[in-house]
Each structure stands twice: as C-alpha cells, then as structure tokens.
Image (tube, rainbow, N blue to C red):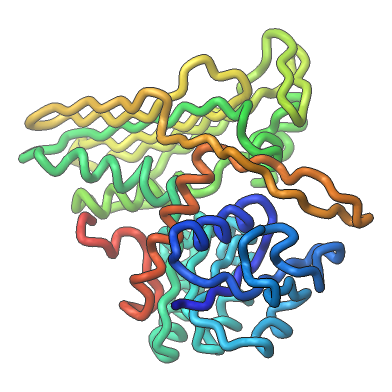
Length: 349
C-alpha cells in the first residue's frame, strides 16, 4: 500500500486524508502543517481513522527524515511560485507529488521557466508531479472537451459555472470578496489578491484538447464584484446592502479564424440557481446543463485547534471540495508514469 505524506491539513487537506482512507487509496502515515497548535499532535486528532503513530510535523524536512514516503499530497497554495520550494524538495527526495495547486493544472502556461526546471528535475529523479482537481481539472476543461467529441466541427465553446457559496468553506467565501466594500474589492483586484485561480489554465486546456492554438496574450479577462441589494448572511459573514457577495469572472479567447472559447464563473452568496453548463456551436450543436452543478454535500466537519489551542470547528469544505478530493486521490495510481504532468496528459485530451 502507498504511504502518503499530507502537506497542509486544513479543511481540504483533512478531506483528502479522509478520502484516502475511505477509498483505500493510500495509508496517510504523516502530515506537515505550519500552524504551531497542530505541530506534534497525532494526525488522528484532525483526521480520525489514521494510524495512531501518524503525527503532524512542523516542517517538510522533519517529515522527510521520518520517512520513507511514496507520495506527497500537497494542499497548501494555488500559485506555483508558492509551492515551488516544496516541490523541489520533494522531487530531490524522490517522492511523487499530487497537488491541489490550480496553476499546476497547466504549469507552463504562466510559469514556463519554472515548469521547464521542475519538469527536468522530476524527469531526472524519476518521479511524477501532477496538479489535479475539479476546477481546474474537470468542470471547465475536461468536461467541455468531452462534450465536443461527437462533433465534426466546433465553432465555439461557451462554458458556465454558477455557484452558491453559502454552504462553501469560509476561506472560499472570503477569497471571493464576501463582506467587502466595493472599493476594497477593486483594490484587491488590482493587487491580484482576489478571485478564482485557474480559469486561464482551464481555457488553455480546452484549446489544447480542441487542437486550437492558444495565445495567453490574446485572452480577454474581466473580474467584477457581485453586489448585494439586501442583507445576506452565511455561517461566516454578514453582507449588507451595497457590499460584495462574491465575484463574477469571464475569460474569452477567439483565434483569428473567428472561433470562440468563453468561460464564465459566478460564485456568490445566495445564488438562486446553481448549474454547470457547456454550449457547443458546431456540427452537431450540443447544449449540456448539469442542474445543481457537480456537488456533493459533506456530512462531517473535523475539529481543529486554533493558535491558542482551543478546539474549534474547521471551515466546512463545500460540495465541490469533496468531489475534488476524489479526483486528486484517483490520480495516485498514475504515479511514476511521467515527470511533470497535467490533466491534458490523459487519454481524452
């Protein structure tokens, strides 16, 4: 059985561990977290069901010394630049990596130099590094490509993902600006500190799957706040009229021959209708709408200690998060198949 090391054991990290156990995909034998209140604790305190001797280490180096490890599951950050040092360390140690990093879904798109260096290192070490999940990784990239497979001609692909974040984890609600004034939303937008990560990667994956030449510089991108008309409250934040409920983001790309690729993502508190949609203009035309979206409500929250050591409920991982964990764990049997991979390496893309 594969021994897995889990780096980052907040909400999503805990759910990944739970999925490993329930799906019998690996043995979660240790973890790493930078929260001082977590360090040294038995991993079973935040993820019931793991072995009693599995502990949470305070650094990756400490965890590596306690190995051996077959695979590391890295659930810490979206940006490749934020996880690069850990990736280099794991590659040097000869450990395969599955990561939740959205930019790792198509790493060469925005980080070509880092991608080249990491890919060469992984190839030399004989390990696999893969970024995967649901979005990016399925809903707004793999699914649209699958829907074009019956077509002999594709003129445009329009995708939409509409999400009510009311039941989603606190971190996601705040990342999308819930509770902010519009002016603060715009300030964070200018600083690149708000909104969803990975929409550009999804667009590039679709283009690749369709055989279209993709030019990142030709992509049109908009990000706007969704503003409340009346007070709306979730378990974590109260939004007054005139404040931000969430974000609406669109990416469009049109090659010179007139074809069109468009991705629309709206994630906000109180969204009245959730769905995922793919509209293909081609021969034949195809229109698919998944009512309610690709979701699966979690039934349990794990307690986690705060910085003062007092137990509290972890932010509830939302429906998409649960599906994402399954997708990530399902990638583990592909280890050692290639160096730095992304979802387009699969047979459908």
